[in-house]
Image (cartoon, rainbow, N blue to C red; front, top):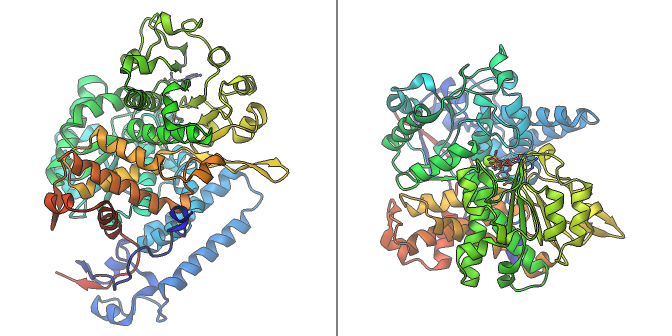
Length: 600
Ligand SMILES: NC(=O)c1ccc[n+]([C@@H]2O[C@H](COP(=O)([O-])OP(=O)(O)OC[C@H]3O[C@@H](n4cnc5c(N)ncnc54)[C@H](O)[C@@H]3O)[C@@H](O)[C@H]2O)c1
Ligand SMILES: O=C(O)C[C@H](O)C(=O)O
Ligand SMILES: [Mg+2]
């Protein structure tokens, strides 16, 4: 059990508690109080108040970090009490506002609160509330966060990038807002997603918040409601397409690379065509990855392998399992790609043979070679007539499930409720003794089914996962239907952290695979047997450290790790597995007030 509990209290300090190193600040007086990176509110000691010209600008009593934390949490608890009984969305948005106000004011305290209460706060700053925040972004907007590049900035990006006030940026999350969760095209309002993802980078991977940068590339929107909305804050034009789109994207990537050559760019929530196109275009040139394609694939594969273990079968049995994937977008195809590679590697068969056990559906049903206008990215996975098992082109989910009797049914369609009662009941006829149902679409209302419906209709022996968090299901007589959260948050922070520390100039398939394998082997047999496929989010800092170390070692093994600072490629090569993990942990930022020293 130690692996799960070692760092279970994610708020507890993981590493030796040396006095924090001083931090240089170029501001003085009120400017410091208005800068959330440096602000300590009432926590500035007298010496600092003198040194930084703060004396008289704050109430005289000095409040410790712990007291400030307690004060915030108690006001948060009062808010919970005062909003009790109100609509869920109203309550969630009030909670988000409360956290956001702290984020805007004092980042050190904000991240301490987030880390110490990650299980409770992740659903507010991340999926599912972040979806609601994006939908209501223009009304909620008070002050900017991150950077906004738009189609109006063509030709200016190289100079604009220097407007960002931090000298160093390690991690960028970029969106064009074209496919925000399962909510569609939200234009500039999609900026909430990079902000939420980067909050997870700080909380889970310990990336220093002064070195993160959320970015919105606003190339217009095809959402007519937004275009008609007087309050819409983005560019009011239809989305750029084709070469125009790519030239903006190229200019942006060059600008980022020119200022911060080693910054990692995570592409997030792009519509499928641009998700695949940009990954292909940039992955050999920049240190980047697409989280929806690659991060999701790694998490889903780890969960599917866990399901095989939960059935009490050897991992090699994965190669024999029949899997139905509903949703042939960036996520569904990403999962399929990685799963096929895993089967081929495990069983030694060709990828063509490995594909035969997978069935892929999109909005028009089962995808077969008979389809005209098939999406180019889905072509390699279209079923040929000899593999159809009596099914026809465009067969419905229910027909496919009834005929195939799959071991696992995965939803990455973005369509709420499509695993209806009929489909779930058909899963009772699965050839597996413990079939898996993963309703991975986000946010909660877009999930293919609820956990309760899954256990009710498909039976109590299933293994269940949803993309957004959900309560375990009470099966009566003290029995629990465990709800896993199959979300890429278990991998993207570690992929970013490991890549960053490796100093590699690219993120390879091998590095992403290492991340997935690490997550797959993280869980202990006794938990897996209970249908628990992923660690509790309370352990996310520890999971991320392990994933980060696995990614770093993969980069070293591939000979592409250049290291950073005093730790170069040679030093990395000589690190044992344990040393690598310690090195990763030692580089994770933890929120505490550091002495501020003024520098002109
Ligand atoms: N849990 C996670 O970690 C995770 C990660 C990535 C994406 N997602 C979720 O997955 C969903 C899809 O993301 P994406 O990037 O692949 O989107 P996408 O737009 O690229 O693809 C959606 C796919 O679903 C198909 N589809 C639509 N309606 C359907 C229907 N009625 N029946 C069957 N298929 C249908 C579409 O044809 C398309 O192939 C989103 O809701 C997103 O939030 C979850
Ligand atoms: O954002 C999430 O919660 C997961 C994923 O990246 C998604 O697009 O749904
Ligand atoms: Mg996403």
